[in-house]
Every structure is written in C-alpha cells, then in structure tokens.
Image 1: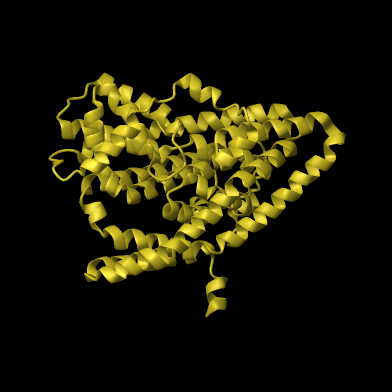
Image 2: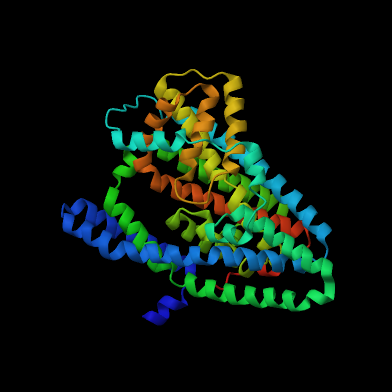
Length: 432
C-alpha cells in the first residue's frame, strides 16, 4: 500500500490529504466532543506546524543560492535588467487587473450589506488599534529598506527583499570578476543542488502537513468560518478562480505562451497545494521553484530570480481581497463611493499589495491604507477588520494559492521571452 501511495504524483497525494483533513476536522467540530478537537489541536496540529517550519527553514538559503546561481547563469548583467523590467511590468499589470476584479465582484455580491457588528470581540479591536496606530513606513522608507545595512541580519530576520538585493549583487560581482571567481561560482551551483535536494525531501512530507493543518482549521472553526461571511467568501473564491482562469490561463499561458493550459495547471499543483494549506507565499517558495524547473521547464536563471521577486511583490490574491474589503467596508458603513473613489481604491490597493508580507493574514493590516482613501477612520477600520479576522484563514488560503499560481505563470512567460523555457518539459506529463 505504501508503494502505491508513493507511486502517486505529489499533487494527488496532497489533494487526498486535503479532503481527508477536511472530513476529519469537520467530523471533530460537529461531533460535540471537545476532547476530539482538543486531541487534534494538541497532537495533530504540530505536524502541520513542523512542515511549515521545515519549508520556512529553506526560504533564505534557497533564495540566496538560486538567485546567485541564476544571475551567474545569465552570463551578462544586462540580461538581468531586461528580465527585471519584464517581470515587474507583468506583475504590476496582473495586480491592477486583480484589484479591479475585486471591485467588480464586490459590487455584484454586496458583501457588506446588512452586516451587524454586535459580536465583535473587544480584545481583538484593541489589539488591531494598537497595531495600526504604529507609524506606517513611508514609500521612501520602503525603498531604502531594500538595501540592507547588515546582510547577515537581513537573512536572520527573513527580510526577503533585502536578501534578494544582496544576492543579486553577489551574482553580478561573480560575473564581473570572471575566472578568478570560479571557486565561488562552483560553490553556489553545488549549494543550489544540495538545497533543491533537501526541498524534494521536504515536499514528500507535504501530504502529512496539509492533512494536519486543514484538520486543525476545520475542527476549530467548522463551516461557520465561511457561513459568517458567506457573500465575502463566495465573492473572493469566485474572483480568484476567474482571475486564475482568465489572466493566468487565458492571457498568459494560452495567448503569450501559446502552450496547453492543462499541462500548466498539472505542473503547478504541488505548489498550489502547499500554498493553500500554509497560506504563505514565502513558505511555498521552495516548492514553487521546484515546480517551475522540474514541471514547467523554466531555466534556473529565471526561476531563481523571478519567483523570489514574485513572492515579495506579486500579490494578486491580496489585491482582489483589498478591493473586496474596501467595498465591504463602504457597504457596511453606508458610505457612497464615487468613480474617483473607485480609482483611488484600485491604485492604492495595487501599490499597497506590493508591500504585503508573504505570511498569513498580512493583507488585513495593509487594508487601512486602502480604506483611508474614502474616509474610513481608525476606529471604523478596527471594527471592520476585527469582524473579519476570526474568519480570515480560509480566505487567506485562497489568496495565497492565487498569488503562487501567478508567480509561476509569470515565470513561465518571462522564461519564454528570455529563451530559457524548455517547452518539451512544459508539454510533458509531470513526473511528480
């Protein structure tokens, strides 16, 4: 039986684990026995946390070695500029489309209409107010933070954008020095092979981690997590599905790449499964890089640079959510929005989502900048977010799945433009 299980593709095992986890979690939640839910929290949830920790352990070393190796593999620093401009342009374009889609679905579903805030927890409101009242970093501060004053500290703290900047500089330095830097170049190539092999080992544990995480979420909250905010949940899931199908599938894969949709979605299922269960783009990054290279035929020079950047700035699911939250707040508070307000929401959500950390529920704390464009006060903001926060986990899971799918779609099309996409690998049935 174990041999049959191992013979299955990873995404199939993850999907089975996801369904089983939901069944076990829901059965525990609605059984009425607190001992069962307590057992899941104490004895099963830690397996999911351990899986997430294993992935997070790999994030910084994987970014460093893949970025350095990727830049060195280009051979010409000028190619890095070309690749970067194309990548950022694609990410910004899809993000703007995403927030517009969020506004459209928010208008259609009216998720904030008839909302009552009577059950909002006062402790949660106080916590949120304290968090948001802290000084928000300015645009200048965000730009300056890209340059690490201490690269080692940036790695320790997991400051991904600073790590990306420093890693690119190392790669450019190796190219510029030339043959004298051959030992360092060989070191990073060997380190990349080792870290990718460790990543494959960790990926084999994905079904266990997914089962544990989903069972815990469902046993703790049940289907009420969606029912309490039904219209907002439905609007978000549908908007994300439409965005994935139209933008990533229709526009990028079919139109720009001219490649089969089925092969793309089969190739990214491993990353989607991990993204959905962990709700963290950063935690999914090692799996995304593996999927891009092994299943989609994206060269390491592109996968190692585009995907870490995407985990930091490509937040289409977050953009959709910010647009929905804006309309949810306006409808719940009885605020009439003008056409100018809609444009302001779209522009602010696009820029704000770029700064969203790749961790669960980070986008909720960025919503204040978006809601502030049409006069929502701090007190009103904390009321809105405190109402949503307890139900945010399953919403965040879908947002993250969307973000990661976008990272892989953009990486594929950039690889093709750069002549670094192996279409035979892309078209082949994924081995995993």
